[in-house]
Structures are given as C-alpha cells and as structure tokens.
Length: 176
Image (cartoon, rainbow, N blue to C red; front, side, top):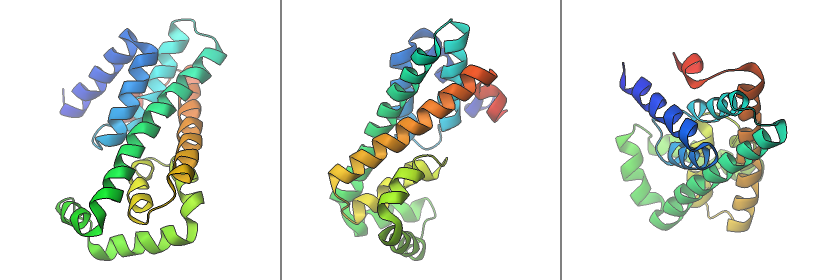
C-alpha cells in the first residue's frame, strides 16, 4: 500500500469513527497540509453518511461542517502569508519550486480578480488551498476573506459530500 493509500485509509477511518468531527478535522488538515487530497475527505464523508442512513439535510450539514474546517485551515494560511510577508514567503515557495516570477503573475491576477478569486478559487482542487497566499500577501480585508472563504469552502464541501452521498463515490475510487 502506498503512502497516499495509507493516508486516505486513515482519513476514511477517521470519518467512519467520528463523522462530523472527523470531516471538520480532516478538512482542516487537508487544507493546511497539501499532500492530503481534498477529494479524499468530502466524497468519502458523503458515502459514509449515506451508508449510515443520514438524511440529505444531515449530509448538507456535514458538508458545511467540513467547509468550516477548511475555512479555518485557509485562514491559517492567509495569516501566515499576511504576517511573514513576501520576502520570507518567497524563501519557502522557492523550496516547492514556485519562483518569484510565478508569484508576480499570481499577485497581478489576484489584484484583478481578488474577491471572485477567493470565492470561486475555493471550489477548484489545489487552487483552493493556494488562493490564501496572495490574499494574505496583498492584505485582503479579513472580513472579505472570511466571507468568501466560508461561502466557497462550504459550497465545495456540500457539493462534494452530496456527490459521495448520492453516487457512492469514495476516496479510494477517486484516487486509485
């Protein structure tokens, strides 16, 4: 079993044992720690909810709880970018192969689409975690950031939970 499969199994076990708390914690962790795939959390939670006989309304609430966990994780990234600033962050980003040139492009793009970028960016895998960086670097208003992050993360969470709930899709089927 690969490391990714072990990680996905741990998330599935967490969700099976502690569904609402599990989706909150797993979403928070997967937002802060990039190797954890977001697709391992929400559809699996939805599948488990359907197998445990939860109603659609309870599944929607599950997606909202997960969305709030992801929002807290995104806010941590935002605050790190806000506090560290561009120079310190560039040192870290260079280690993960993101150059200053790429960061400049992202910042220009963010200046043009900032609010919409945070809202809709929360619904795009990989991008959903990264959008917090330019928001923090460019000192987006914390109120706006939180509003768009919560709306986008909860929308994503509910959609992905319902996909797992109605279509029986689990993380293993999506990743493997």
